[in-house]
Image 1 (cartoon, rainbow, N blue to C red):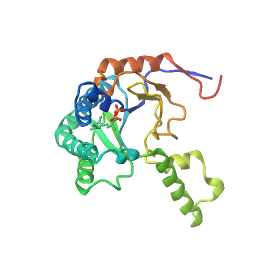
Image 2: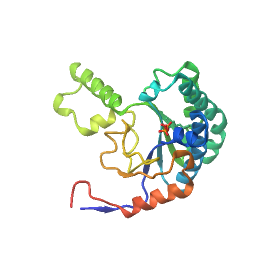
Image 3: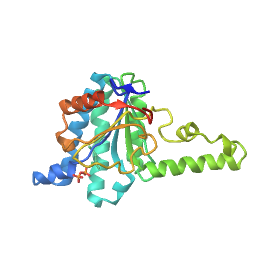
Image 4: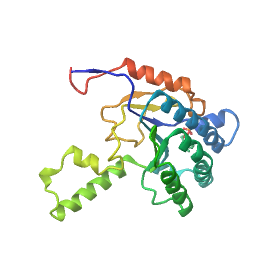
Length: 236
Ligand code: FPP
């Protein structure tokens, strides 16, 4: 059995290439991130217009804490200013924002802003925008296993009752369908600790374009490439 694709219900994007975009123009890396916000705006609008229901953006990996302090600081400032500047437009567009990731290392201010955007956009019905922040897929799976093991030790779950769906239900993405299409910009062909469990049957698309140059047209092209693929889920 195979299925011909039409529109992906869930698109997940690794937004890569901000630093290179800036370097090519003799700018500081953070300026690439600022320009990257324009692409976020374009892609959110394009996804909503196309009828995509879930859009996940990898905005800050747990490994990104290892970047120079000034770049991390610039990203935190950018996330806070995005909440302030973008929330009204997102509400108007019917976008519901949710955050996945640990969030343990964010400052009180960043966490307050992230809570604010989740609460203020909670009624959005057009597009679910999921921001992966301080996200690491291995940590997510490890945390889920720890949670399940605690239940087994307490006698609430039997070992033989551990199923794939129980594992899925203990991930950050419990209420989110698996991604159908994963895009990574900038020509890199790696998953980099992103949705390792959830992307098991996803289609992958790796355009050369750097994230700040990623346009609505490129997003439409990704949807076209997806529509041309055949998904067999291990069957024939
Ligand atoms: C990867 O490019 C990009 C990031 C680590 C940050 C992504 C953040 C944004 C696009 C800005 C705001 C996002 C939201 C959701 C408000 P890189 O710096 O690794 O690029 P390089 O590989 O060229 O160095």
